[in-house]
Length: 400
Image (cartoon, rainbow, N blue to C red):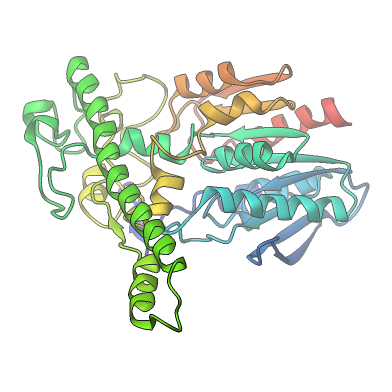
């Protein structure tokens, strides 16, 4: 997506790049940056940058930093951690900038690939660090592959599917019509409490409860379509295996086409969380709006913004379904028993304070720290050095 307007300054900035280093993130230390190209066990390319201090002692504690699809090779945490003597493999999964067919199970395999590289280079302790959607990815990698001696979540949401469950627009009545709407479930309808931006909105708590249930109902309907497509392809594969391609080439060819056919899902209107516009819902320090929209979420909900706009059926089920994705911290964090640090920014427009508390409560770690960084936004702009100081001190206290 191209640049979008910043309503406050009139400037433009790239969409979704809040995790890139800013001028104030200057590490004030000489660093080495080594590009890497790794190949996973199933032949996928994993690229990134290894950040290490240019001078002084280098720790044997290595940090792995990734997101399911974001370019975390230049995440702001990498130079700040390296400046503190901690090597970082900041890398991209095979789904860089493209989650259309993102399978979290394979992205977790890419994390295991980077982990093996850290060990090859002499790491004695490995730390899985996830920012935003990277948190649930790192937890899944730990559970599926048994990797990592510590887990850190920075503004880690409960999983991309769970997040979709709070932002999808339940008022869509026809998945093929982006303007179809059930007015009783429309958060952008004045009768339900909406007021044009930048006025704050006021939604009745009972209406919000019905709205949340309807969000999951829409996801269940999309799941049904996705699962039917996956099952149809699987049935065609079984039928084709029973055919002799040399004896029945035409029937075999028809079955083969059906078995590989992928009907893409177009999922409209995925930026409709009432909490974006009504700060009395799950109150914290956040401003009005969303980091996915500048300035009004309505524009991104109906326009080119939002999330998961085009998905394969299996990609939807693996990544964005609140009901089917395995990348849910509610399911995985109980199995993460290594030392665990959660740093929650209280001005995050996307992740709620109670969600961070719920992740901490469900954790299987006996060594657990939940730290709230007051006033920090989702990508910690203006608070990054403070956040990384917390991480460094926490790691030094446990691993030297």
